[in-house]
Amino acid sequence: MRSFAALTIVAILAGGAGGASGYVIDFEGFPSGTPITDQYLSYGVLFSGYPAGDPPPVTVDYGPGSYGSVLTSHDWFAAMKVEFVDPLNPGLYLPVSHIELDNPIDSEVDYIVVEVFDASGQLLYSYTSTSPERVVIDLESDIAAYMILDDTASTAYVIDNLEAYSSIVFSDGFESGDTSAWSATVP
Image (cartoon, rainbow, N blue to C red; front, side):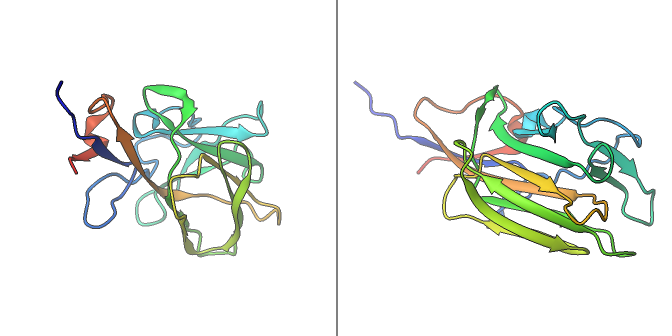
């Protein structure tokens, strides 16, 4: 019987850790008003309105020389949910350990309440971002299944340049999907 070493897959949903290359979800290429839901599923990221049933977030294109295309809730103030899922089975969370996003507006002060949860709905992290700011969330392990972004101060908000990282171990080899967003090493 052959013994197979576990293949460690580093899912770089956006950006990279330690020099690894990957992707930044920057919402470019979508006209203003485009609802964003599963367009980034190949990176393991789903977007929705929150609570469930609310309209999905939409893009706003500020144009070149400004913020470019960004994401906001359907009405600028409502909450949105960002889920980290298995690209091949979006009903299954694929928790992450590191999340970054921009709260980019610098012409006024925008607030974003960022709450990160595990798969059971346990709050892991809460932070209120004041624009302009790069929000960086480092957790000790792959436990963040989703996050809720909200504007409790009613200042309106947008996000840009979302990145998330996860270390995944598969015992049966490399999983398919958008392989350009995955980096593999054998320990």
